[in-house]
Image 1 (cartoon, each protein chain N blue to C red):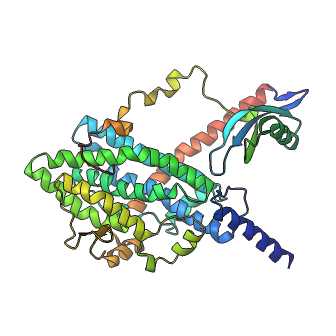
Image 2: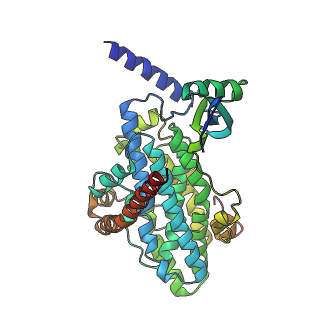
Image 3: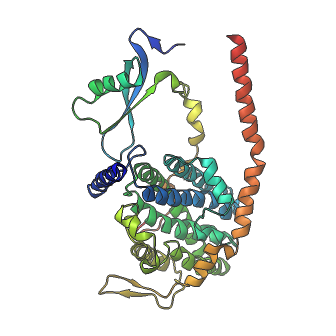
Length: 96
Length: 318
């Protein structure tokens, strides 16, 4: 499967909305190379100052969990004890 | 001359960002001393998470119930995960994880001294979760505001998960204090052995902490060792008293005027001895890490070989 189309390669776009925050997926753009794709991503996704940081990654370089992924994530389903609310803390104990 | 001008310009921009509470990201220019400080601190932090699995692992096979065994395994698994968050954040500074592990094995990188103490009874598992993780939380909540972006984000992720660790520890202590006379003694004994090393986790006093000042200036650290230690004591003393545990410090006193606890002198001699490698378990901890790293070699070999064969099959199909 090729990433190449007549509009250039497909790139996934990640934005950092504020200094220090993690980058989040925003969408994708086409571009014949990284430089062009970065400019396209800027023009498509950050017209209203939505970002202070911008990453692009070739779409075909992303590996994904199966979309029907119920069983993929189910190891966490029966481990309620990983949550702090599972534990008894006596009333009146502070700072915990 | 040009180089010098560039450096000064970069430094000004870097310091402006720090001043404005903007985070420094991996691709931003940063002074070499800033990078080196982070490499040291973050890898030490990552190693601590991973080495910290050993004292707790000691009790997996002797956990008193299936419930407590599952919880302990989940906690140890989290510690491994925290190590990975931190290694991955540290790798953004341009040093590979292989190199970090190599420095650890060569004794060039340190980890928190607390993990060089042995876990002698089940109550120690309670004391570690409650006191050691409690102290780590105080430190790590403060580090959520560190100036290096990847470190800050790793800290936020870790802090979200730590709360379970502390609660499970305190629950163990509660259960034992509500148990038999022997169990209460066991809990108090664990308290006696872990209290002082927990206070040492915050590092030397501010007057004796040479790296601290620059780290504070560049906002790698946000609060001083003494201030964090004081916060931990403030939070913890009431929790101990609530379940009938005695803090093993005859000089501990609430200071109404200062609104904090005055406390006794920490045995800094012990602290430096353990740092220098002469704690009760230093040798064992490092040897165990090296051994399990070596014993895992076949897993890494197999993964590489599997990948190589897969590429070969792909080539043949083309």
